[in-house]
Image 1 (cartoon, rainbow, N blue to C red):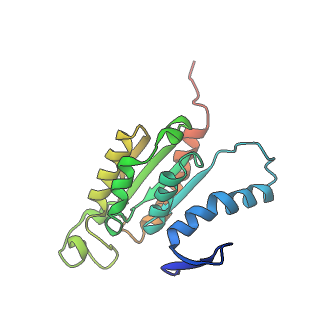
Image 2: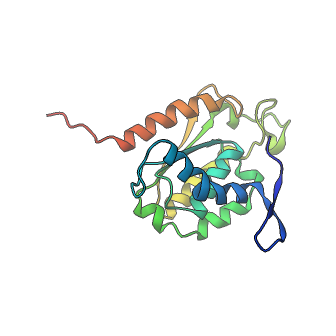
Image 3: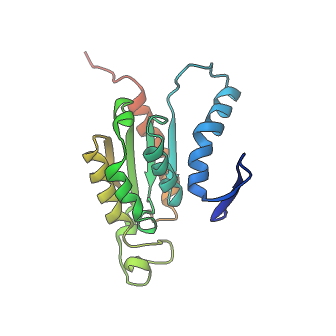
Length: 192
């Protein structure tokens, strides 16, 4: 559980309240990544391959990192991104400076559970309950993919994971996401 906002006390001694994703988007590249890479023994100045994976609202955090810090990660795996709960993000997708991510050859993979496409009218956007949270997630994921491609990014998906819903897609997301990262990172073999 993450609170909706975190209060930071700045050097100016002014208390400022930030939404949690803004706080995390600030801390990950400036504090968490350097600390983790130092702990792993990655020498300063070496640019390792980095990937981030998120499901549901953490997929929005991964997307926020792409939009705010497009030169940090090589691979973004977004599972059932909860775009309908953050509709303003689509406007940001259309206007962010994608050049650093394109230059880095960053790629984005988007997946949803195929059960997320089933409608029974019970939940938000007509989604099938209890395991799905919003019926518009698959459709908005498709719009997201189109807009990211229009910005010049390499995007794989939207991939439907058979037999999975919003709650269960996470396990498949990890295994399929890791296979996709490896396929992008390893040199392609040639059969001679």
